[in-house]
Length: 133
Length: 150
Image (cartoon, rainbow over all chains, first blue to last red; front, side, top):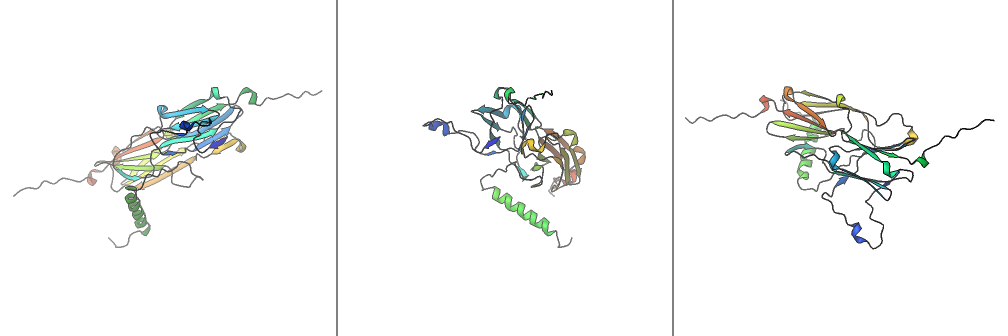
């Protein structure tokens, strides 16, 4: 799975509008992810602390998986000591051909997103029995 | 009280003071949650907020087994312990495309500037953030003294 470092603009020539992005927040961090492959498909696990089910936006467009999340965490006043700042999360990945984009499922628990990207039936390994004569 | 204090402590205080001052006019620099190596920095990251009567501690700790979280308080010292379970244990090394989320047991201890009341400490774990509310100890709270006019 290749990773995209910047948001891709639409690939139409002369379409300058597509390059423009409007977002409420300008700061985004890349969430830490684990990606592993099983026979059935790919699992993407991302740490998204403070993110609820409403604050998350997962999309697949032209084979690019986009994870966008916004934490719902009103910061209290009077910081005394601060190590982290809550910002949005953003990360993109190029999906391989064999992922069945229609059947992607997502599950969010304790600030961890678990995405399952099943492989298409064609791409799943098939065992061929060897006949011994 | 001797004139001698821990030089590292002094240095740490100085660093904190400097960063707090810089914070007020430098643009915000977000820290990435992605880090190389498992022990590249202290885990979990902690923010502390202070009210007149309480301290609020927030720790960024997604994916922790809630039963493994242990918060203990001794005078002004807070300790957070827990365990982050690995994502999957039965995956062959060659089947990993990315492995950035660290796993394992962690412990973090820090001192608050004044004592807290250990009986009234509350901890809540929600959406991957651990919130610990520590009311200040009564002997640490300021007391108002009425001035009698004679």
